[in-house]
Amino acid sequence: MRRDWTTLPEAVTARIAERVGGIVDVDPASNGNHAEIASTVTGSAGRVFVKAASGDLGVRSLRFELAATSAITGYPPDVLWHFECGGWLVVGVEHLDGSHPDLSPGSADLDLLASALKGLQETPAPDGRWFTPANRLGFAHPAMEGGMLVHSDLNPANLIVTTRGLRIVDWAWATRSAPWVELALLVQWLIGSGHTPGQAEEWLAQFPAWTATDREVLDDFADRSASKWSTKSRENGQGWVHDLAAWTTEWATHRSRASPPHCSLPENPRPRP
Image 1: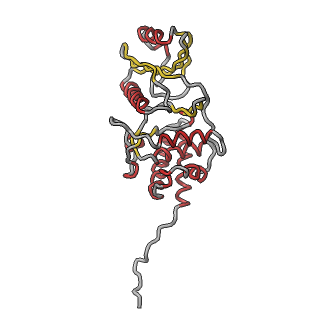
Image 2 (image 1 turned 60 degrees about the vertical axis):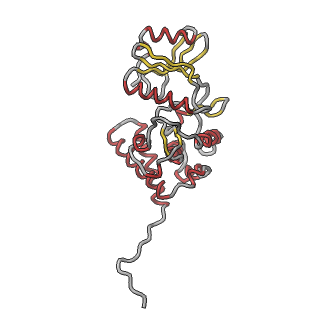
Image 3 (image 1 turned 90 degrees about the vertical axis):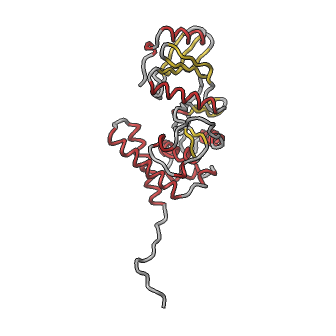
C-alpha cells in the first residue's frame, strides 16, 4: 500500500537529498503499488524516480525488481543508485519523460511496442530466482515453461514512449517462461485498448512464438485466465479487476467459437461388409 513521502525517516530523506543535490520537489506516482513510496524527486542535479519499501512484501518486490532491471538493458529505466537505511530499501532510477502509448487499432505506438517485444522475446532469464508461470498467474500448463525472462504485466501504464523508443517500467513480476506467455498476457490489454479478440490475435501473429503455439494451448490459457479474473471480480469491486474479467472473458469466448469442433467416432461403429 502506498504511503506518504513524510513517512520516510529523516535519515533516509537526507541520504536521498545527497544524491539529488538537495530535494526541491516531490511528486507522488499515480500508478502502481509494489513499493510503499514511489515519487519523482527533483533536485539541483535533475529528476530521479525514487522507490522505497520497509515491509517484507515491499522489500522483496523491490529486490526482485532490482535483479530484473540489472539483467535487462535498453527497456527498463537505468538504476542510478540504491541503499538501505533505517529499515528502508531505497532505489533511485532514471526518470523517464514521455507519455503512455496508445494501443488502439492502427496506432503508430503499436510499432514501438512490436519493436520492444521482438527484443524481449529473445531475452533469456539469467540464473537466479524468478517467478514461474504457476506462482505468477495462479495456473499453469507444461507449454508455459521456458527459459525467457518476460515482464508479464505490459499494461499501458507500465509503458512509456520516449525519445529512445518504448521503455518499460515496474519489473516486480518478471517471470521465467516460454516467450508466448508474454504475448498471451498482452491480449487483454489490446482488447481493453479497443481491439476485438480477432484483431488482437492478428496483430500478435507477427511474432513467431505466437504462431508456433498450439491452438489447444492458447485455448487453455484463455479459458483459465477468464476463469481466474471472473472469480476475482466476484470478490473484488475494483474497476480494473472487473475490466480484466470482461476482457479475458471476451477473448475466451472468441476462442471457444473459433475452435474447430472435436470429431469422434460413433460409439458402436458398424463393421464394414
